[in-house]
Length: 272
Ligand code: 9MG
Image: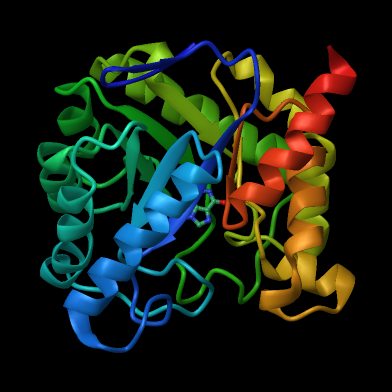
């Protein structure tokens, strides 16, 4: 069971979270107004394509990405969330900043996708005081340095222990279990070998008793395996999403919603 505000999912089928990046490199270079309109149109297309959740983000978390100030992030995401008012699916805000979480939830978002797992001061409490869902993700380091020298003794054990602690912290703060999702954070301070270990061991994260989200869409781990540039990783992304679902992921975070929905439909029918 997953509850995001007024939306409730029984998780009897895998959910697809569609990515809406509102960053200058994703939509047009014609300024805020042009990128807002393009992001809203893209979000509506993802709804048509079969997305279950929309994840809206205004700060890139790619390796090497630059920090974006809170006001700039708000200027990017709030008009998009407001422009999607009344849309028939939950909106997730992809941010680690408590100020952005607060404003986005007030504007209509009902999920927080936090690559920092609510570790910022005040983040746990502010989500606890709402009925929003939260995705707690693992990362090692920060986007500007995380791929420099990731190191683990046992990546699956260490990520598991981190997520167990963050689920406990969230519950202790008053966030009900049915509002919590966990994510091992593919590509966030992980080598290709670490990512593959996590994917192979994904099933083990289900023991934490909350839905598992997996995000590998178009990531460099897929480029390293296929030798393909980011725009040519659709097939690899769909394969990765399917493998994650096969290993117990309840939600996949993807760019290519239509292709992923089709692939998961085949998986579902075969497993009926
Ligand atoms: C924002 N973002 C980029 N990659 C991600 C991933 O793998 N998981 C989650 N939850 N968020 C991500």
